[in-house]
Every structure is written in C-alpha cells, then in structure tokens.
Image (cartoon, rainbow, N blue to C red; front, top):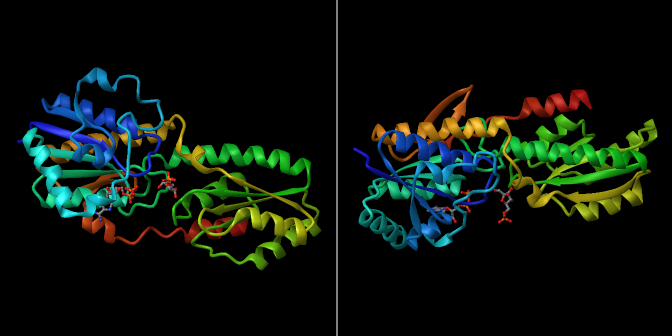
Length: 319
Ligand code: ADP
Ligand code: F6P
C-alpha cells in the first residue's frame, strides 16, 4: 500500500513535463496518496530538496514549458553509494515510490532505485523522441511545431534571396525531429543519423535543383553530424545558391506544450500512478498504437527503435 510518492524531472527538460507533474500529483492526491515534488532531478533527491505538493501547487502549470521542479544531470548517480544515499533519504521521509520524468539515462537511475526497494515509474520526457517503448515522447510534438514554424519563416526569406538554408535541429542521435520537420515543411534535403552524411551528394542535389530553376532550398540536418556553417560556406562556393546556416538550438526545448503533448503527458501521468497503486515498479510508460502501455525498463531499453524507413521513403517520393 502506497502512502507517499515523490516526483522528479531529470535530464534535458521538455514541454509537457509540467502537465505530467500536474497529472501525477492530482491523480495521486485523488487516491489519498501524499506527493512530494523533488527539485532538480536526482541531484535534489540526494540533497534532500523536496516539498509536499497540494492540488494548488500544480495549478496554472499545464500550459507552461520547462519544468517547475527544475531538472539536472548528476553523473554520480551511477554510483551505488549515491543511489543508497537517495534510498536512505526516501526511507527516512517514508516515501514509498517515485515517478521519474526524463530520458533513457533517467530510466536507468529509476531502475537502480527500484532494485534497491523503491518502486519507480519512468515517463518519457524528451524532445528527441528517442526512447524505446513508446511511439512518442512528451515534448516531441511541441518541439516539432517550433521547428516547423522556424523553417517556414526561413523559407520565406530564402526564396527572396535565392538562398539555401541549412537548418540544424536537435535529436541527440535520433533523426525524428529532422525527418518529421522535413516532411512537414517540404524541405529539399533531410540529413540525419539514419540517412548518413554525404557532402558531395548534397552539393550535387543542390546544383541539380538550381539548374531546374528553384529559387530556394531547405536542408534540415540533425545536430552532431557536421559543421553546418562550413556546409553553408561550401554551398555558397560550389552551387548557385548562397548558403546560410541556422542552428535552432535550445529554442526547440521551450514554449507552451501543444494540446497533443498536454494530453499525452496527462494520460501517462495517470498511468504512472495507477501502476504504483497496483504495486508495480521498474516500469516505464509509453504510447503504442494509441494505447497507453507500460514495459519493464530493461525490456523497453532493449527494444529496437521503430523503423522510420517509410518516412524517408515518403520524403524521397514527395521531394
Ligand atoms: P536523459 O534522462 O534525458 O537520457 P541523461 O542521460 O543525462 O538524460 O540522464 C539523466 C540523469 O540520469 C543523469 O544525470 C544521471 O543522474 C542519471 N543516470 C543516467 N544514466 C544512469 C545510470 N546508468 N544509472 C543511474 N543513473 C543514471
Ligand atoms: O535530450 C534533449 C537535448 O536537447 C538533445 O536534443 C541535445 O543534444 C541535448 O539535450 C542538449 O543538452 P544541453 O541542454 O545539456 O545542452
């Protein structure tokens, strides 16, 4: 029987984390469970920084980006001694269980705590959409909207100046933000970890488009693939377009969550509480084929990521 739970956000923040905090808090309180909001992820946990949450503490946060709890990275949380300290603090406060909102790294921390006797449930909070066990993560939809809005604007100015805009998007080794935004914006080229990087091929394609008479081009490229400023210079030097690079950066992490992210986060928050009430720990929540589901964290992290081949195929057909 669960009497008190903690909730924390960990790793990179994402729009919709607040909606998840609100849903977990309100569903738990509705079940007669006390809730503690833990500041700054695992760092705040091992420093014993937390406070009780009442219904009003999560009012007016549904539409706000970021996380009211703050987020942090604590690499030392991989050490058992640090995890033991976290467990001791939770036990001393009589907190029986934890909801951890974050990415796969945060899930690993949640699994370790569960193995040490504190049931934890992970919720997928990241704009990268790179977590196995779910078709969509909390924040991806909002970040995609942000990218699409930016690329649409870049298209306006690029087409006025016969330019090629090279737009770097986040994703941390996952190409979903790139391919979904490429499809949404009608980009000319998408480069991601899934496509690989072939500079000559990109330049050839741009020369071909220029010869066809196109007055602009958009290249959406995932971060951590190449130096986009250098690529833009090469485009200027060896195609008919003048190249300009735009790194969208952390703008993609902010902003009011879309309705889709708010609803997804609320459904997942509800599921986390239901699992804990049922005595389940060491699970993470996902959405698969429109159903809210959960998997053991180990099982989820071992799952292959869903193939995006059909999206790249469609992109090639439409371009
Ligand atoms: P994300 O959760 O978004 O993947 P990180 O990989 O930075 O982000 O992980 C967030 C935090 O989770 C880390 O700073 C650390 O505190 C904790 N963490 C990451 N990996 C592990 C691990 N293997 N064991 C325990 N805790 C971990
Ligand atoms: O995981 C979310 C993310 O925004 C990635 O897309 C990006 O690679 C990374 O975090 C940036 O991390 P930081 O905020 O520490 O610069």
